[in-house]
Length: 291
Image (cartoon, rainbow, N blue to C red; front, top):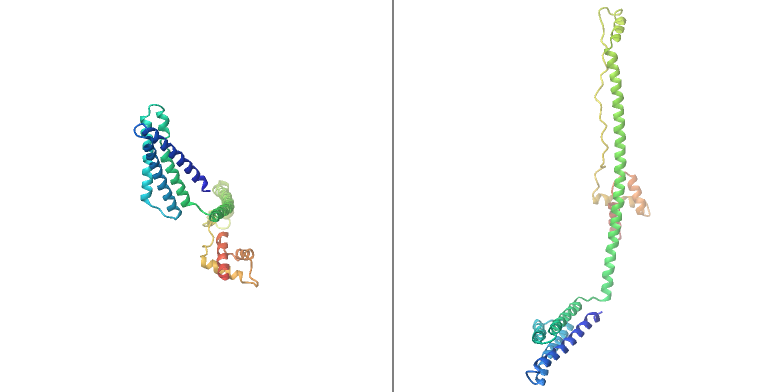
């Protein structure tokens, strides 16, 4: 894996060193003997190569020296400066020479990237462990999402049923009130009618002369409103109470009940708890027994 970063750095270093040496010999060879120019070019490349080798040695030992790094960058900047100066003074192909003047700095940057890769590289075993942890986290997240969707669907179904029952009760109450209203209206019309008064008078005068009883309408007592269906049941059990109930139901028989049997008896006993809390209580009780 390290070849992916070290090979480009080595290639860029070799190209920049050859280019720097050639430029120094061609540029300074006109002003001084070419052996002197060759020594100057080798000195720049040699200093750069020496600092680079020392940096690599320190990196292999897990160490780092800021002064050596600064000296190495200085040699790289000197080489880049020589290439830039040659490109600016060249009579021909100045643009081409200027285009390759960045190679020494690029080589140093590639070595910096390779050093960062080495400090952050992990073994295949560690990478496998990381992948396993990530996959486990994805699995747990998927299970949690599925559980939440199932609970949301169950709650929606329950609310729909409660709402429908409330609507049926409201319709029955409205129909009953309408029927009572019509009956009351009929009674009041009959009481206030002229024929009804004459009929009552003709009947009662023979029994009690001079008395005409009034036909009073029946008095309807106050009605008790139908209480609204409560959406909330009994208050939720605390974790300690839930653990105690689960443990009692589980050990109500020998051998101990399974989770499914325990949950069935828990619901049948009239207790209420979500599936998530019931399963968590089961794990705490079983885990506490196992430990």
